[in-house]
Image: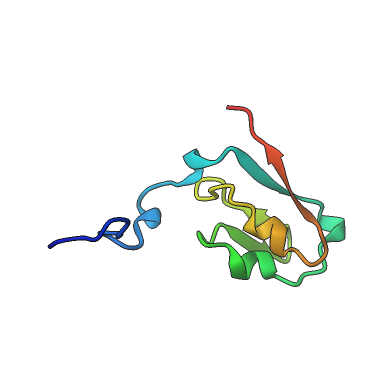
Length: 86
């Protein structure tokens, strides 16, 4: 099979490969500012944002790449990005 430059040979590989190691910034949330718009859950490209009644919005840092889409799409400005120290 011949692939074009930039093509993905095996789609969906983030389920198998943890993508959290790519991250330089991590999302954090101030739960009291969250208006439950769920934009963060909807727009996360890795499905690394989850909601539960008990704990509110949570991030799966094994898969979060730190792209910041969740913070950008947050209507209540409850999510912000923070530099990670490794």
